[in-house]
Image (cartoon, rainbow, N blue to C red; front, side):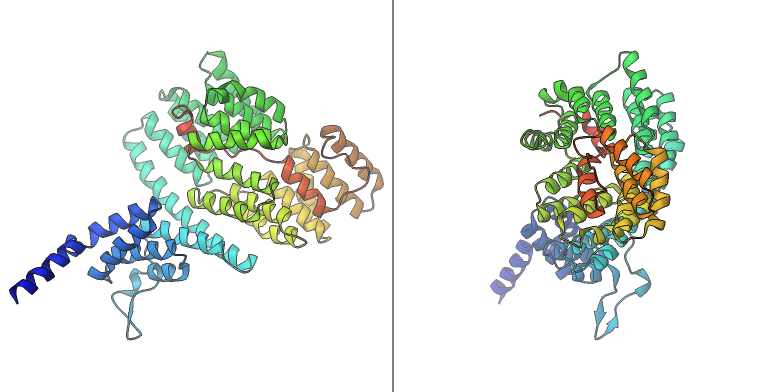
Length: 463
């Protein structure tokens, strides 16, 4: 009998159950994050076996359920109290779990589930919830970093706070914080962040002037040149953008490879673009790369990989609206017949959270025009005609609006302006259809994303 007891004790020790819930929970999360699903699931099951009511056990098992594509089960474990004989166990008021790890998991599970939903409406419901959870995390993070920057207003702390504000969607607040970081002695990194905030606000001339000031004092770096190239791409000039980064890209600088790859995509040099983006992927790890890949998969008409790039991007950058605009264009181009209709909720979602997003404004206007609702599209296009007069796609869209309003003189003028600005893509002699035009817009309007994560890596990682 004593031998049997010894064997049983030895087996339990070997199984690791005596190490406790916390040990296996931490192991499970770390393993699952690194893609080791089988080992992570085993660790989660051990935590759950020790104490199935412990919140760490629930988090670990929810993460394992998500890795096994059991998204409903994972969400329920984090948002509903455990049940025994149809009765809740413990305090139901503690659910849904609201700690940072649980909030992150709840958002991730919804993003993953959205990719499997049978209808655009159900997918958007999950994505809306995931976006809200992401913003909840950022609000908490901003509050913490604000306290730290108030106690110790160093350039490093201010840059971290500005990054969090920017990722939460408050570019104006981020700009003020970055300016304080520069004044505190943040050197080149803080000045690049100022440019980033201006870029995200659509103030390209001011961003360009900041870059010129950096160059005049001799502080220019590969990041400076890459940001200048991003502005060229935003102005639909891939040739100038590529020229700006070619030298740094040849040296293997990650941000230069990324922006160069996007410039080549815009110029429809797909073979070289793929090579450059692959090299960028070996040099950097930032949401910007998934964003660029999302556009690449539109061009290659690879709907599954386009969707995966979107899902991965939202998971890494839950507060961003750029990925929702990307997804809208993916649907408009890749889904036969119903694509432009399915894109509308994504454009609207982006505009609710980022009212100044010009790509979302134009996409929404075209989706509305495709349904004949020109009275709703008109204010969007009139605003774009003031803010974005040098973009050919805006004039081409205006020709559709004027045609629906029976204004042939303005139709002719709009088509002429579009041809003048971009004769390779917008050389129409007759008014295009919205469903066809939006495909060309998806090739023409591809401003690089630019995130703090990318800039943080820009000068330190090379291929």
